[in-house]
Every structure is written in C-alpha cells, then in structure tokens.
Length: 99
Image (tube, rainbow, N blue to C red):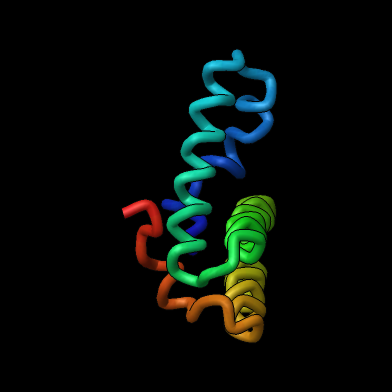
C-alpha cells in the first residue's frame, strides 16, 4: 500500500458515484476483476472484497492526515491487521493483483 501511488478509488470515489452509468460500470468491472484476482490468491471471495475495502480505507486515512508519523502508523496497523487475519502477507500487497 503506497498512499502516493496507490488506488484512485479513495480520491475519485465520490466523483465516480456521481458519474454516468458507463463510468460506474467500468469501475465495477475493474473492481470485480481485482476481487477475482485476490480471491484466486486467498481462496475466499468475501475476504477478497474485505481486503480491497481495507486497503482503500487505509489510503483514504493516510491521505487525510498531515503527519508523516501518523501516515506510517495507519499503514503499519493496516498491514499488521491483514497479517493477523492470515489472508495475505503484506508483501503480497506490493504486487499488482490485477496482473
């Protein structure tokens, strides 16, 4: 998870929600593809959705705060939580699940 180079959903989510149906459909296809790729890795479709939501939420929070220390704490706790759930090892988060 890299807040500077990460997912566009935290930044554009509100705009996408107000966009034309074609835009939302394209985003939905992309999210489904990402969810499928994570499901292929961890074998649990619900957990794959939760993992994506966790990553998006962590990025929203890191982009919303001023302190570098707080940003690092948010990312570290998110990674630690994902490690504890045994869904993925955080090194997998640095890989592109859509690849």
